[in-house]
Length: 278
Ligand SMILES: N[C@@H](CCC(=O)N[C@@H](CS)C(=O)NCC(=O)O)C(=O)O
Image (cartoon, rainbow, N blue to C red; front, side):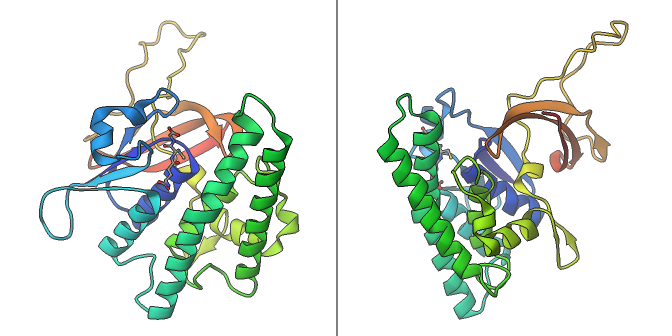
């Protein structure tokens, strides 16, 4: 079992993508960064940089004590090595995977993050800063586009490098980018988010958003005779479906709500089906 310390951001989505696609059992431990929970002393013990995501693996490969990992790139690599999935054993493909994973960690993520900050959150709109980070994001999209010319995925095979980059392309409009300017990125983005790969149904990070503390069951105004809603499905009751719950938040830069239906197996939410209800 893996505990995932998570909030609904692109860096968090990288890890839900891996866990969902690898079918690993995990539990969400919400870290509400809006409320400053990333500074809680218990969280700092596993994530000293006071950032999410982080994981604790209670069944590490060496059979020893639980292992905690912070930094999304390190987590992806840890999980890839644990499962032998989403990183090729082939030397050259592995090198390419690591190059593009670290490119995302050092370039696309931080620059797009600053872009979001100065365009959307900064109390003062500073044209120089906005221009700098929109242009830098655009340059990085260009790098990604050239890399994807003539290949399906960053390291040829679908890998943790794609999982690292994809959630940062989801809010492209918010970053001042149009995918029409980057046709290879557009094709890759559609293939990961909406297509099918090797016969397996693809799920986008949006569809793998896990439970959050923002979940609220809406009381039925028109039917007061019904019993009051209870707190979801009891984890541990195998094979049962939870009732749809409405989750509100920022998804890919869009303010919206989603109806969520959880399927619990072995105490773990295994599938999420979402319907955007903006
Ligand atoms: N390099 C880190 C960055 C993580 C990061 O920036 N997380 C943000 C949310 S996406 C966070 O926890 N922010 C809390 C804060 O700024 O205090 C990683 O990839 O894990």
